[in-house]
Structures are given as C-alpha cells and as structure tokens.
Image (cartoon, rainbow, N blue to C red):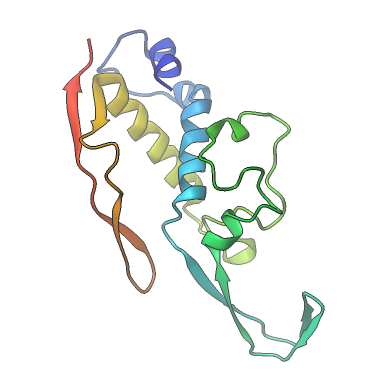
Amino acid sequence: MLKEIDSIFQGDKIRPITKDDFYNLIYCEAIVKEVARVFPVVHSFERCIDKPDEIAGYQWPADTSFLINVKAIHNNEDYWEESNKFNPDRWMNESFEPKKNSYIVFGGGLRSCPGRKLAIVKLVCLMALLFRKYEIDLVDMDSPIKTISGDDAVACVELLVKFKPRN
C-alpha cells in the first residue's frame, strides 16, 4: 500500500488527489473492499417480497420478510476462498469477480446503496491522504477492535492509534 501511494505521489504530501491518482490507487481500493468484507458496517438487512416466490427451493407467500446476514455471507467458504483471512490481494486479479450476491456491503439489486461508488472514492482518497503524510500504527497490536452494534450499524468505539509524520 505504501509503495503504491509513494509511487503515485512521489513524496508530495500536499497536492490534491486527481482522478488519475484515484484510478491508480488499485491496491488501496482492494484494501477498502477487503476491510468492508471482513468488517461490514451493517451485519444484516431486511428484504420483503411483494409476490409469492420460490427461494432456496421453498415456496414463500407475498409479504414475507427475510433477514439477510451480511457477515455470514462474507465469511462463507462456498463464496470466498479462505473467507476468514484478511486478503486484499484477492481483489487484485483483474478476472476476479465475487460470486453473485456474495459481496453485499452496500446491499444489492434495486435497493443497492446509491452512494456506494462515492463511499469507495472517499475511503480510498482518505487512506491515501493519511498514509502519504503519516506513519500510522496501532498502539497495541493485540488489543481487539472495540465495537458496538446498534439496530442498523456497527460502530467502532475505540481503536487506539499513533500518528507520526513520515520522512
């Protein structure tokens, strides 16, 4: 990640990020996608069918609600090789495409989040802005990430890091 950032910005720690810079931050984008897969902000969401349908070999009447377990899907070995391993490199293969409905960080189908592309752009750019200027390390590598789960989302309540200007 640092090599990619350094090769793009060539030590310039203040110039704005351009569209071309963003398109070249492919490993940073892979990290953002993998973090979202391993630590989804939303662990589940609900969908309701408006007409009878057959799903997973069962007949379901209209107005049936389904709770979609994002975390379980993102950790399913049927969909993800080494699903419990953090591996941004899985996204680096140009021919890699997650199996249908196996990467649902932003929901899916017609109800997919309209801001999903903007969210990826903002996260990748934030990553590049921070890591080109600072060395960022966890205070305690063995300390678990402290989160709380609300009705809709999971939030980090404590993640101690130390910032040091990069040389």
